[in-house]
Every structure is written in structure tokens, then in C-alpha cells.
Length: 267
Image (tube, rainbow, N blue to C red; front, side, top):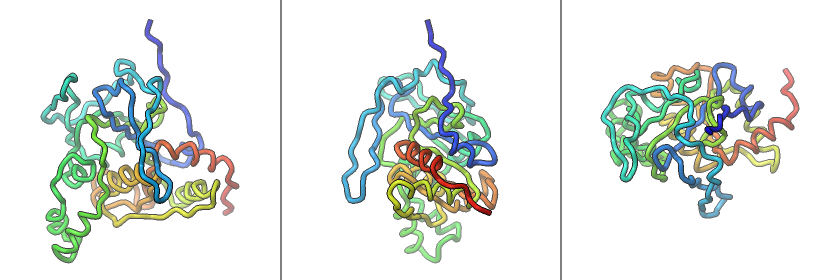
């Protein structure tokens, strides 16, 4: 008898911070359907060496029990070693998929359609320096190369990525991405400081915002706030007054608890 699984309904404080849509969960699957035990990088303390831990198998969700997933624009399919046929590479950009998931859609993909995004997500070794230089974003080749080399890059290997709204997630993901007005983003920064009084350090340069700042950098540092980038604002069209923010799974409970303890903002 198959047990019916219900969508995850946690983190009410974080949910309420978003005024349009809902937070987006990004999950990097290391095996087809992610049916085996998954490994996460523990967010290290300052100066420590990253280690790995195993998430209990019961936290994963069998592929046959997942909510139907929106098909992406057809591209060439790839097949993993010893696994069934993997999902297609999407014709959308990663930031576009995140924005669509914010509004209720769900995707499972093996790749996306942005060359700098491929570099950031570890899907390509092609440095985007030349692309950046031609776009006019940097003064010269040296500046463009320095900018490209400073991009965060995903070090883990994966076979597919699930991008979905928090309401469709089963309580197990890698990164939670929110789009917030500055006052709401401030509350997350305050919640991050609630337990230990630590400052939130921003690390951004207006490039690779959703894939780099809010996904990869959030995985590395636990949380990452960004002002967005030209590509994500142009293609996924989130509002001018919104700032994107990513929180690693291991950090979400701490932020939620901090939000529940903070006094309300006085106008």
C-alpha cells in the first residue's frame, strides 16, 4: 500500500516575508530520483574545513511519490551511468526557472540555458570572461577575467536539479531562495544575528546573482544576500524594489527561530 505524502508546510515566518509568490527550494540530486542517501556539505565555522554528513534516508522522497513536474523546453537528453534516462536540459535560464517556481511551477532538469550559469553551477569549464567583456560590463580583458574568476562555483557533482515552490517541497532541499523588499531582507539579517550577534557580510558584484550569490554562495556561507544582476532582472523580471536572498538548508531553522523571537519593526 502506497503511503500518501503531503507537501511540506514549515517555516511560516519565512513564508510570510514574501509578498508575491513564495520561497523557492533548489535541490541538487546526486542520483536519479535521489532515492539513495544524500550527502550535504556542512556549513563550516569560520576557518574550519568543510566536512560531509549523511542525511537520513527517511528524509528523502521516492521518485514515484513526487508531485507532477512541469516539463521544460526540450533539449538533448542525457543518460547517467547505471541509471534511467535523466531529465532534459531546460531551455530556460536558471534564474527564470526560480522565478517560475516562485509562482507555483515545479521543474526537474539536468541543465539550463545560460553560459555563465553553467560555469557557476559546474556544468561547464568555459570561463565567461569573453562573454562579460563583449557585454560591456567591464573596462577591459583583465577586469573581465578577474570578475569571471571571482564567481562562486558549485563543487559538488549532481545529475539533476529540482526547482520548486516551498509548498511543494517535502522538507528536504539544499537552498531556499526568497525575493524580498529591503525591510523584509533586514529582518532576515537581524534573525541571523539573533543567537550570536554576528554581522552578515555581503559578497556580490552584480553578476550571477541567482545562480551564484543566492545558490552557490549560500551553500558555501550559509546565507547570501544579493542586489540581483542584469541577466536575472532582465530575463526573470523580478521587481526593481526586490532583493534576492539565499539560505542554505542547514541555516533555515536558525533563521526561522530568530524571526519568531524578533520584535516587530516599528514604522
